[in-house]
Length: 472
Image: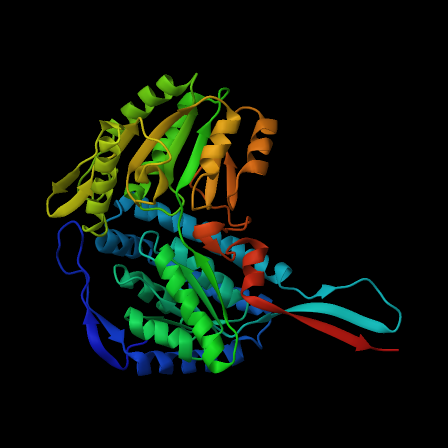
């Protein structure tokens, strides 16, 4: 269901391209959140008693809602955060890829694990749901970031409180319509909106068992502090999974297919206007390919069509939040002041009533500059020449983040050496900016902790119970 009670405030998001109203939504106060958590606790008790196979069937029923409403959901994403409509439609494809993999895998992954026979004993390991999982989802990929936690939590036997971004509340409502009631269980997923203070108090004081947060580093620190506060004040320990973004680096080795590398990496930097935690934000190119790569990248960057995100010809829409453009501009200007050169783009652009940042290609930058070091969540790509693999690895690792890295090479052994040295949660060879649901999604350092997707995502939202029976 969609939690609608105890609302003292109303949220009125706007379309970032037209600045017209994009809906009206109630914001829960703290008593309203507490009531939603209590309802989720009741739902969780019934849901966990249902077998994994049956839970998976009912989750598939919920997925039928998304299939039946594909067009409306894509429109809501574009209307509320400005993603070009063809990218919103593509996000639905990724949503189903992840949701279907998780649903198909759940029964095998969550089955009790039998230990080798021991005379007179029966031993097994069970995967037990945690109870109530709070999922705090961002706006940039409102379906993909939410489904990682939502599908896993439900399949594992938990109830969900989904607090979606204030920019994309319509997506939270779609999740609630699809999964709010499954089988006999009401209030299984509730979509809420809440201000930061009340939500933090809820983490610290309400009967929540785990928090899944995707967002900024500072937001992750706040969530973790609130979880620690809960443990200290209530004498009850809870944990959180934190996916906090990145400054993902790629290396184009001397033996790379430079045309393919340029195509992939420009797209990885510019897709969704660069508003991606695993988007490419810096590229290191072997000096023998540097000019070739740069020339190709310049042509690709110049080819982006900026404009109305409702039009299929549009390749880059407005920024979801106009105020973020200034931070991007500040990074570019600071880099120029230190000697970097803007090959193309580098400016804020107004189209209609929307605020855009031009697709931007930068040379002459280095790892001391914020444009190479600090996440900007924008369509900005610094390209830096390197002399060899060791220099590339050193520079890729020279970051407070560690979400993904990528190498473009024709040599798998070279890619293996790069992967062994790269201090990131995911290492790609000849691709980037993509999540395979069978692989764990995780980061190191300021990119967060915990895991979503894969079998390990299920393990993070369950606990192990040891069954140790003497039977003879």
